[in-house]
Image (cartoon, rainbow, N blue to C red; front, side, top):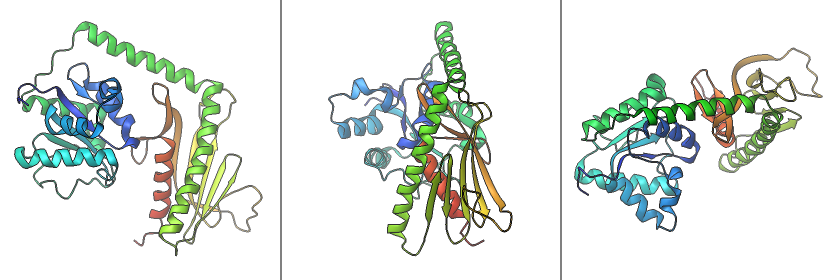
Length: 312
């Protein structure tokens, strides 16, 4: 494709669990750049050969590829196709056309990426800063982001204000509370599924799980993991939190008697709200700002628990 006539200014490559972040970055850029986000291009992709289309988008049709990188990026069917397209294109062009945004902690990039290749630290830059870096990189590659018109700015502001209102209404609603309870139940189901995977892949590691009401306990040789979903109102999630804590011995749990008062060693706190239009999920502010759907939260919590068993 003519290097001055790309179909897209930027295309996002990401794992399914990071779609919310990709959507937010796309929303920050779509009024000034031509963007490709597969979930926003379903009509264009309908009826096409997916592998051929994605090879073309990431290998030829986009000026800049932005990769939201985790260690397992490139292992799933779609990201494997995108990774191959990026590598094949880099064989002829080098890696100037791709920018990596590491999401794991500590941050890492693929071993095959040249050490001189720059990447964006999301924790340092934040989503708005990362979007600005992407836009600046598009300009360096010859792209010309158009100046946002008053009409486009008004529409973007309207989207922001409408979502803020939708989010506030969700938090103060029976539906929000009911959905949070459904997702907490799904969290327990997903933890059980992941623990079965641990059991089958590492037979010497023994974990057990207990569930009651709005509490989950995972027990192992090194500590107890307690998870509790706490809210105060039937029609509001204000001041609600998901408390995830490591305990010396058995965490507090209905029916369990303690000779000594359990001691909390470490904890995380999550909130439940809308992450984007129609999509609820979990957020954490410390030790890092992140958003999760329920499946990715279960994985995050279990890794947090297993990290406790690592020798210092």
